[in-house]
Image (cartoon, rainbow, N blue to C red; front, top):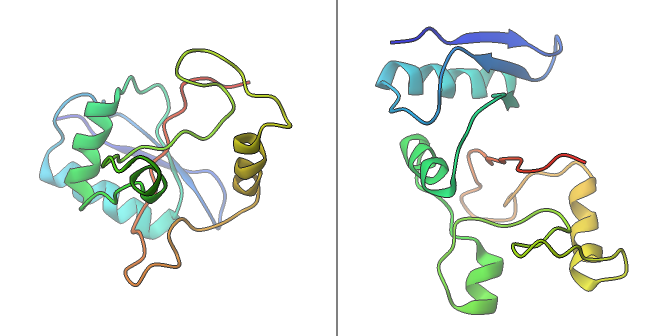
Length: 133
């Protein structure tokens, strides 16, 4: 079992975790360490991970019950656990600044807490970056 290294990013907020590979099954102790790090630091960065949707969803389920993406469920009637934040679509097309979806996503540029309006708010939000500008 690998050792989790937790390095604070700032004295008040955020930490970087190294020493684990999220593509492999984590022990209960490692999951506990991640939960404790969320409590202590609020924001965790786990660099150089190679996840896909299935692996991210499996990790999410180890941390708690995933929230259905309410935007997709309402729009398409399909249960989905993932949303896209960005203007590059699945097929590689880039939405311009005037596209309604791009304008909608502008709200993500401001600090916010996901699902804070729900009766039981989300415990954590997990983001996986596929492309960095």
